Image: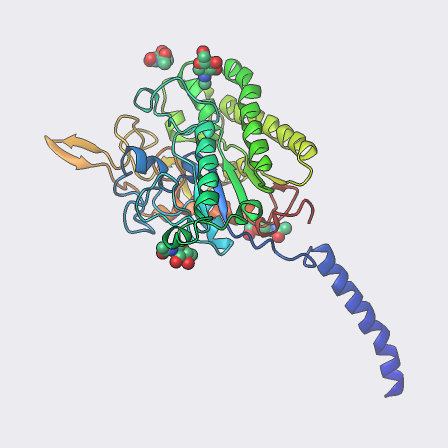
Length: 390
Ligand SMILES: *[C@@H]1O[C@H](CO)[C@@H](O)[C@H](O)[C@H]1NC(C)=O
Ligand SMILES: *[C@@H]1O[C@H](CO)[C@@H](O)[C@H](O)[C@H]1NC(C)=O
Ligand SMILES: *[C@@H]1O[C@H](CO)[C@@H](O)[C@H](O)[C@H]1NC(C)=O
Ligand SMILES: *[C@@H]1O[C@H](CO)[C@@H](O)[C@H](O)[C@H]1NC(C)=O
């Protein structure tokens, strides 16, 4: 009995040491950040109602897989930002522009579909790009922040208090960004060459940097920045006349456009490195969403998906996409108006929803890959993104 015990004790001690060491290395010694709010900036990838509030609702069948009807999203259900909010224990974000039913106690969403980083010199009607470029989203955030501070000093504004974040949330919040793709496609759709668009990237990322620095100056500390996806694999880009047959690679994507996306991403990552040097108290996580989306599209079958280059909701053609007859629009068939609805049998096996945007199933898959930090620099899970190291 004595002997056994003497022999066993050191073993247990070693085991305990190894276990503690394992937990320490795994970062379990750190507490989750407990983000009280999310402030999001971006384009349709994360628009939860902004463009719909300003220019009319994205109609049925948008939203039907989850919200049972239109919910301001260009998707059949939830977006990556919805899964992010959910994973942090926060409600889905209200769009800043939504006048009715909004609740900003745990954040606000300034993203709108079609947004660019640089303001465009065309209207939404002319080009399809949103007038709410990142600079406008930033004006809106500034005013939101200022007004929250003003209203909360009035002791009897109970109604507002139930709808607004606490002032201290602005420094503890997670600031999320997913924007840039439209700056690149805007140039290409104006028939600029890939090289000409490439030449504009330093200006684009420069304007992005200015916004991050200003949010930091206002007290923001935790930033979660998505890079841009392989838009050379999206139906709305593939269907354009600017793509000729010879340009597509073995996956059916336009390689030179994906290279352009990667060039942008490279410069974005350099910008993030500069920001880390300049903003000492900031934790900035760069998330390689490109690689996740590329893996999903190019190895769709392996991940349980079908027809990676076809839209679920659309009308006609190789990609089930027609830029003049979009998802939720109307098409005349034998003199009758028919809704452009879901053409795919099962949206849960489709990656692309409407030719431009990912399906809820695609978004969930993407979220599952990025949430634990495997695609982040530094490799920090989202719940710990207030730390510089993990
Ligand atoms: C819009 O026009 C201004 C003034 O000519 C120019 O500086 C800016 O770069 C243009 N923006 C884009 C996105 O082309
Ligand atoms: C807004 O949401 C918060 C948290 O979900 C809730 O506590 C609050 O009562 C809501 N405000 C209103 C006016 O419903
Ligand atoms: C771009 O080129 C295409 C094909 O030549 C043409 O149809 C389209 O009008 C051009 N777009 C612009 C904005 O110049
Ligand atoms: C992160 O999650 C993905 C998807 O669930 C998984 O394949 C990967 O192994 C995870 N990585 C880590 C470091 O936990």
